[in-house]
Image (cartoon, rainbow, N blue to C red; front, top):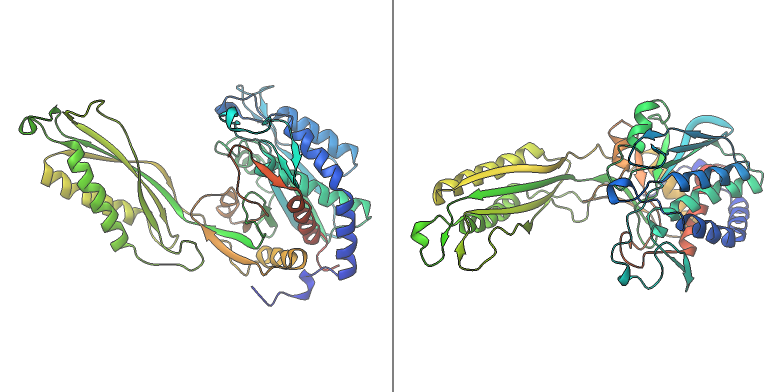
Length: 423
């Protein structure tokens, strides 16, 4: 990713000013992290009360710094307190209104899980060896703190952004986005425009070099094989669904890889993946031939391939096994997410972010695709190029989740570079 236009850069003198200013905010950033970690924001789908208290705290924090008015795009949800899921937007005026630089973080977290696996209280930020431990510290509170302190640094330095800057804080990312960014983009369809520059700091690498621009399609396949249950000592009296399922598992594994061998170097791994994963328990004892067997495949499919072609191969192989073993086979797809259009590696947001990463982190950025999904895809499906980026160790959802304090500061400096690019 070389050859960026000089207008994407920030002058060395200004970069040093921003670095000094953000370093001076280190203790304030740790304190902000501690405050929001203590405000549990687990959504109702995960047994929590929602994100309202955290959103109220952040609204008051933003207003106390006089960063600008906070707009609310709340989504009704009677399961959450107080019947709403909060979505906040802060816009800061630049020298030019367009393109707006949007940075989006999510307010909600997952539950702590088995608390005996934690070395520290999940909802109490504990600072140790340059890390902050606590549920949500990396996912996604590091982003919340970094983006807020980036605009605070600009305000303290009396700097005006090159173009308008928008910060989004949304609900419901952990359980589907219906009450979060999906709601915001539905009720305010012109808020984020195709010409805008969108960064979602909810995915990253430990050195900050990786910029996520594309995702594979996700297909979860559930296969139910029905035969006839019998005693294991009397196999002729039954039809062994497990044997047929085992044969089909192997056939699908071989056939899918044979049929779809193409690779795309943008992704790691570069090929589509077709993995047999979960099996349901259908009989509790060892001496019964199962009349039903159920198993799953997790398929991550390159965007250049048609998901319907994959489904057709699965159906064809199931038909062959059904005839051979005289069983009935049902195929269903609990998840079938067709990949969003990729953000081009030479899109303005990719190039501008790459230059900021290069200046701040001193690494050569690499744009690429992943097999999992990110919320950036919701923008891409609306024709808005977006990237997912941050600096993280990928410990989200784990016991003893943490964020590295230096990463939080460096990410804030990268965002600040985006905001004053060309100055």
